[in-house]
Image (tube, rainbow, N blue to C red; front, side, top):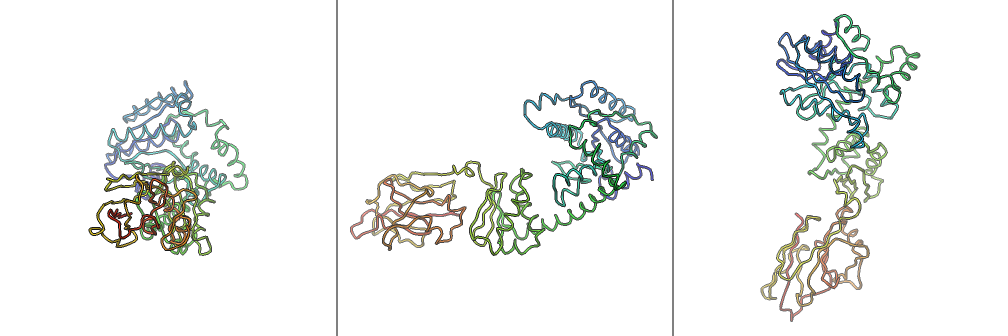
Length: 470
């Protein structure tokens, strides 16, 4: 089967494009991308699709890069394909941003491809990665350490922003593409940086793969098949995990929670994937969260783990076990550094206070004993206003805080009160406490009031307070 037929077969099998689609082809000038442009332009001439060539000159190899740009433009013109180009000064950009060179180049290159796709209303961006690239990618990930998702290598299509990135040539070998260029008189350039062992991928290509191929001449094909098998299984498991996420996870924009029983009752592979999906839901920067950290979080849900526990997982996420629940929260950097303490003053004429840090609100009302309401729950409290020193203060707990508990001799640590009431550890940090200006702890809303400022027969001015955490 010739390569163009193989390309069309792969496109149909994987649904890489449909009739009428406009496709931006990323063309570097190398044999792979030039062959891809040639094949897609031939399909476009039959009216099935339309194509736009897009070339990026990164500005690293001045003369060589200028030659590549000229070759791509001339070839696109020969094919009758519109060609969009851009030239970047990547050395200056890298120096300015301090980014890794390859990462910076990829960021700028993909931004340009998306810009061209948007300008022309294209629904696809075609990339020229082939089977040899796939083998290198899989081997690189094995050496660095990876799981099933990493073994899947590059996927044939994935959505990025409003465009689908497609790789139609993942089953084609480099040697076949070179032969295609020769047979169809397709010009191409050879990137001299491909021989520099400064890049890990080049070491894989030039040294490691050839050495290992002595023991298995079909190693590249074996790695490519491994990627296909792993990719299909990874996709299936990911769908299972997404279904579990929808079924078992209670979520908000900044929090995910699941019962320990539900999490630990899953197969270990699904436990790990579900945790990774939770982390990805809360943050876009979870790449550096290690396998060991995920295992720590997974094991924290077991029946033998401590009832309360927490860890800063990285990427601005805090994980905690709170009795029978596991919770993951997106936390501000201030909170991660322990800098989210708050203190709000309440004057005598204050009638409402909302504490944004904790999500609690308070209502204050003065009345005579005759007109005052009685507390209907532990979220309401009455005080003799004449015994209070203003301003009152609503703040979160500090080390050493104690309350003179009504009905008990002596005082008790607020921390111990939280433990007795099974207040979740993450909630303890921001839980509001009511003090007067003399530093006396008057009330822990929803838990207990103190013995200070009790209403007496002679009380004339009653302060009624209602707290809510809805």
